[in-house]
Length: 112
DNA sequence: CATCGAACCAACC
DNA sequence: GGTTGGTTCGATG
Image (cartoon, rainbow, N blue to C red):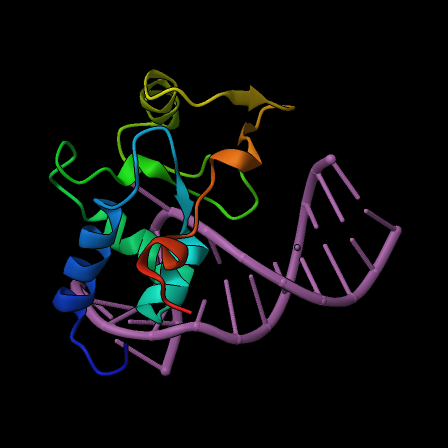
């Protein structure tokens, strides 16, 4: 996805988020590979997300499986994910999601 | 395993 | 031009 403006890329990212099933998460990196921008920028898009309800930005974690950040606090993010059925482990002051819960949207979209 | 620095890229100042 | 993000990766101890 080459020459698109910031606001368009952001909308695309938000649309992709809607495709993540409840009980699954994806990562900043996997999203960045679809959008064609840096994971850092994907994080920025999510941080600017105001529609916390309709746009499920809590379903994005770091590629290291660390739960990552959340504008309403990572404890709340943890709670939301647990409500959706994910198991989250606390490993030495880090919150980790298990690998089988992480999906790559490229597979759903058949982008290969 | 923990810490660190660099790469990342558009917005904002 | 420098700083700033809900990040990542490789190097180092």
